[in-house]
Image (cartoon, rainbow, N blue to C red):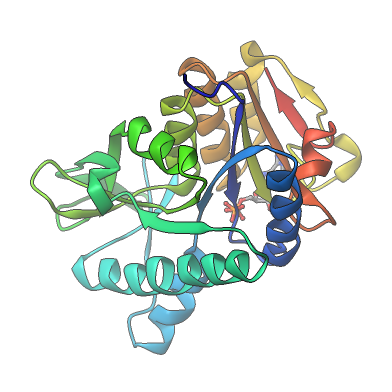
Length: 273
Ligand code: ADP
């Protein structure tokens, strides 16, 4: 018999102020009530800080269509692994274990959980000029092994996923955490994808919080892409992917408040259906 309890995939943003302790404490309570959760986390801020400390400050690429992403050469990739898999993932698992939750940390590399295609060249715009970058280890996610995650859930674990993927040839690739969370939610046919970040949700006129959009029909996502600036754009793309993949709803909500998961599931934030 397969358990049909609905699954919530929670993406923990890495921006300043997102309260990991509050998220973990909330998760422990929700799990005790029988909820099924999967965590996906980011880690850019931590990777940037470690890069600075190791004399390899981060570099970013802006694509011709205006998306910003990390330029990931092999050295940056290794620093990313140290910060994100090494530190953030382990500390989250530690925190949850301390709360009596049997958290299971893994990345998309483990057991080929997340398979991605390496982008063989990335276009970047610098001072109005286009450049082609070829030594970049970032990927576009192709598949997520939902069975592996379902097995972990059935065994009572809380999977904690670091945003790293494996290529068909076995190379490690850096992937965007919001998009990874969207693909994980789709693979699990999750009811909710919850993107916790350092904002109360999507604002029509960022940063004016009084313009928070409470509910957004999927048809308005292209318009939302225009409103979103910087990394918020990736969340909108992730939301679109998740809904197309069969997820019932996507909520973008505040990760800086008390009980961030419960608060969002109670209807606070931007709900996209
Ligand atoms: P995370 O670490 O959670 O992935 P990011 O800091 O990368 O988050 O992206 C979320 C940020 O995007 C918000 O904290 C906010 O500062 C910014 N942002 C840009 N445009 C908007 C918008 N229209 N509505 C809300 N936040 C926005």
